[in-house]
Length: 316
Ligand SMILES: Nc1nc2c(ncn2[C@@H]2O[C@H](COP(=O)(O)OP(=O)(O)OP(=O)(O)O)[C@@H](O)[C@H]2O)c(=O)[nH]1
Image (spheres, helix red, strand yellow):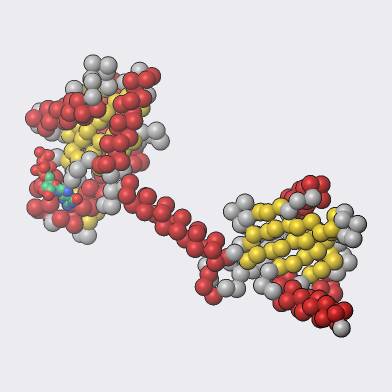
């Protein structure tokens, strides 16, 4: 009677294992498949009869053999279970994902547990791979990461121009100021502003003014080196930090920017628009005690350029 109940229990257990929503694979020392449950059959398209007794890697050449062997060998050698998550390896078995909720995840994300299985003499005779489909969790987490990256980008950039916004740019200016205190390596600052921009707005309308600002920002972005830091400081005022640049080199850059901006012809609807800019340059020196003072000196140079008649470069 007792034997019958135990036999029935084993029978039920086998049915559960066959139908459970987790992949179960038992392997012997030679990586021959000894058990292949319903989950594995459904997702691989191979029946248990097709794969049983055959080498796993010969059956599935798309598996990363050296990686999986390393993992499984550690279980054979240490006798303890091993675990790997989808973050470490997206999909161990390249199964497609058919979950309606996660239509954008083409492949199944998987977590894998590898268990040592002992025989009657308590030595490890087989290993069991437990494969969990974690596509929904992974997609939600990846979606959240994407949203955070997007939010981070939006909080750092100016909406109209895509340049660093004022807050970000000022933080970077602080960093360059402090770096100078440590290294004394040359670093220059250029502040510049579109001349008579109010007239553009008043004559052609605010959208035309926006086009001018956007085009100038794009031109600036294309003109600076990778290590330079461009930002929109205010309405039509911009700042550029030029690392490893002396005052003379910064003036040279400012002058070539001034000339290239002067020759730009911008299209807005049926209009052809042009603009000029005035620029102030200030190389950081040890006599400049604070970042505010540095910015103020560059701003003063910019206003000097305005007073000199605009469309020119002045130094602090
Ligand atoms: N279209 C548009 N206009 C802006 C934006 N931000 C600021 N402005 C306008 O820019 C104009 C700046 O005018 P002012 O500060 O008088 O400067 P200006 O006309 O360029 O004169 P100068 O700087 O002295 O050459 C103001 O009319 C602002 O309303 C923006 O994002 N888009």
